[in-house]
Structure formats: structure tokens, C-alpha cells
Length: 334
Ligand code: NAD
Ligand code: DAU
Image 1: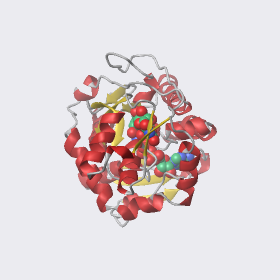
Image 2: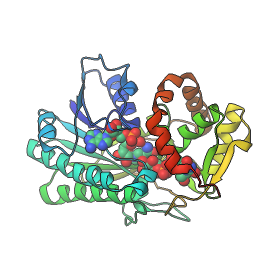
Image 3: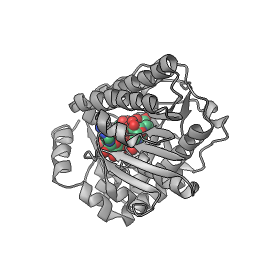
Image 4: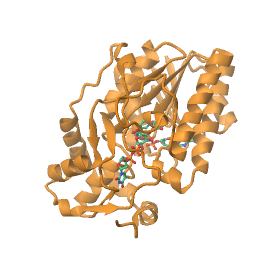
């Protein structure tokens, strides 16, 4: 089987490529990635010499590039996206372009090439916030941020290509991932690395917002199950079943690193900040998938990974990131 993975130089995509190459000795993977600020070939150093793996730098919004890499492909897994909510609030245009238009370009090429399976990597954020209970795949979409609205737009295109053209599509909607190779802009890596540097941890609002955390390889196993066993035209929620509020996560990180709680700095809340995400994953579990990692030990391992791999994240926290950080957090204390 030859799989086109888009956005494979990012956090989840790189973990997925590693998993596929390890698990299936006869699979080939082509990784199409634009290498935006979030794309990082360091994430795949250990597989770059594997003969079954090929990297192509290119944009999913470019129909010519996409047409070329789609040749002879059996399945497409689309991870490529602008993925950070805060950046979408600062500037939505790139999100709409990549997450909606880029998805359309991939779908159209998949249709032209008669690709056997097209899997779109989506998010639980498309359902919006929920106070009690959990969303199932048939619930309506109610996205809050330009990011989640763009992801919802991508999902709609995927569903339309299935209904109208019979393209064999699948969608996964996962909860918050954590683990090795996650960009330092996101909550867990930002707070681990800031704490290691004795810098403040900018916690939004009162820290009571709840996310459901899933270890990244558990999500990748779920994506693999859906790719191979999922029913075309269907959507599958993939969650870790680990709902925690942000202040709890923050305290756990500080406790693991032996750092003081005085590093926590309350900053003004994210605009449109969703209070809680929660998804019902019984459909994915019916495929035989379930998350394998215990949250507390996986968080410890993740912290240890950032401790052991300073070389990886120190580069990411360079000048460009510091500029973003200043704009995002300076003068925002509560
Ligand atoms: P990421 O930001 O770490 O990686 C995104 C990758 O896409 C980068 O390598 C980037 O270079 C690439 N990319 C961006 N625009 C592109 C374009 N136009 N053409 C080609 N490549 C492009 O993101 P992630 O956290 O790994 O998320 C991957 C996918 O999973 C995204 O679609 C995201 O919406 C979804 N998702 C993420 C999470 C999470 O917790 N991280 C949870 C649910 C869903
Ligand atoms: O739910 C899935 C989504 O999870 C994915 O679709 C997104 O791509 C991914 O980025 C993530 O979105 P979140 O907004 O939930 O993740 P983030 O790490 O940005 O924030 C997690 C929580 O922590 C959220 O409630 C906001 C809060 N937060 C975040 C940052 C970066 C802070 O309090 N301070 C911060 O500095």
C-alpha cells in the first residue's frame, strides 16, 4: 500500500508516519509538507533514510504539486493544516486557505486519481463547547474559533465529495493530543519548556477550561484502525477519556519538574475560549481500537522527552517564536 500523508512534518503526522513504517513492512509513505513554521524535518530524522519513505516539500493548495504526488497512491491521510487556535484569532486567512481550500484541492485530486481511501484528520473542536455529556459524530457542528470553523469547512467538503462523487472518504475527530514532537506554542510543551527555563506559565482566565487529553500514538493507532477498518462516508471520534482542567495540568507539570507554583501567571482569557470538549468514542472502539496509555504516566514520559531533547525545542524557541510570544502574551496579565 502506498499512502500519501500530508502535513507529515508536523506533530501528529510525524508520529503517524513513524507508526506506519514500524507496523507495516511493505507500505510506502510519501510525505507532502509545506514546512510552515510548524513543519519540522527534525521530527522524522530517524526515518528519513528508510527506502519506503519519501519527503516532498509542497503546498496542498497547489493543484499541480498535489496532482504529481497523488500518482499511484492507494490512500491519502490529510494532517496538513494551520492548527493553533491563538494564531487563528490573530489572523484567520491562512487557516481558511489551507484548512478549507487545501482540503478541496486534495479531494479533487483524489477523485481524479481514483484513490481508494481518503482520510481527513479533523478535531473535536468542530462541535464547539459542551457543559455536560459528550458529543457523538451525528451532532451538529458549532465551531467557535476561525481555526475550528475552518476545520468544519474542510469536513463539509469531505462529506460533500462522498455524497456527490462517491469518493471513499473517512474523517477522524480527535481530542487534544500530547507527546513527543509537539510544537512549543501548545499548552503542554509551552508550559514544560517555560518551567524548565524558569519562565512564567501564562494560564488563560481562571484555568478551569477542560480538555480531553490523548497520547499521540493512541490517536495514531485510532487513525490506523479507521484507515483500514472504517466504513467509508463515516466520521469517527477519537478521544483519550482523560478530561482535566488546565490548572490541574499546569500543577502536574510543575510537580513533575519540581518547580514552584509561583511560576503560574494568570493572563487575560483567549477570545471565544471554549469551556469544555468531550466526545463519545464508542464508534471507534467498535473497530477494536482503544487508547493504551495511562494519562499520568504518559504525561511524565512526555515531560521527560522534553527534558532529554532540549536540542529539539530550543531551536523552535528562536527569534521568530519570541516575537510571536511577545505579541500573544505581553501586557495581558489579569
Ligand atoms: P502541526 O501544526 O504540528 O502540523 C501541521 C503540519 O502541516 C506542519 O508540518 C505544516 O508544515 C503542515 N502544513 C501546514 N499548511 C500546509 C500546507 N498548505 N500544505 C502542506 N503542508 C502544510 O499540527 P498537528 O498538531 O500535528 O495537527 C495535525 C492535524 O490534526 C491538523 O489537521 C489538526 O487540525 C488536527 N488535530 C490536531 C490535534 C492536536 O491536539 N494537535 C487534535 C485534533 C486534531
Ligand atoms: O481539541 C483538539 C484541538 O486541540 C486541536 O484541534 C488543535 O489543533 C490543538 O491546538 C488543540 O487546541 P486547544 O486550543 O485546545 O490547545 P492549546 O494547547 O492551544 O490549549 C489547551 C488549553 O490550554 C486551552 O483551554 C487554552 C489553554 N492555554 C493554552 C495556551 C497555549 C493556556 O491557558 N495558556 C496558553 O498559553
